[in-house]
Image (cartoon, rainbow, N blue to C red; front, side):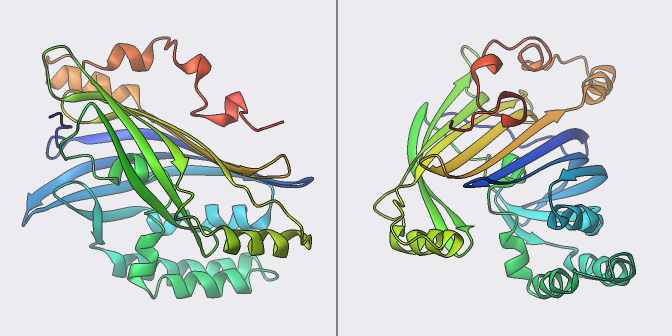
Length: 314
């Protein structure tokens, strides 16, 4: 059996996180790119739970619609989160949820003045979301950058595994059921994982194709649509010997023929100053550093980050 170590207590790690999304419906193209600088640290281990602190240090959004500008505006409510996971590292609670609500109440008045027209619906929906803790936590469980940190890394693994995973409400109210194909690599003679990869296939038996077809009809007003959904997914994660995430490239595209496509990509990169600081404090060499900060031959053929490589179907 193989494993990923729980990261060291109290050590702070900073990351650059880039998220990109593109939705194509016929000739209509909606896209955005968002950059964040974040800090993550493990504060405590107790009562079969891990307590992490997340800090948002800065952020920037470039998008094609008002909703993207809005999403960047409300990033401020995430400026500090205290996140609780189970022993496997799966998110189970947000300890400072009340503080998030307090930040939103203050921010809401500012947004009303800044956007006097066209944001009433978004303010109402955001307020509803922040009144329901369970619903708010579901936003962390979808195909977002949070997946790189809180998908339950601290368990036992085989060299190759196949398992089911459902992304709740991926298409509005419609779930996306997947079959994940996973593989791991470790250093010779060691059992801690240095890299982890996923690909996925659509779980056709559990996919609600009828509901999906209705959704497409509502979007297009076309009633003879072929709703055969295809899935293209590639994820690559790299970890240090200490269990610290060093780099992740996450990509998921769902598409119907050439006219409908939804693509999500996230690239997470630990910042080099973290490496320098650790080397000053600890003479231990980070095993995965060469594959992260030097040329990586896999990168040229990877679809893990579509901002640069544009894997959309032609």
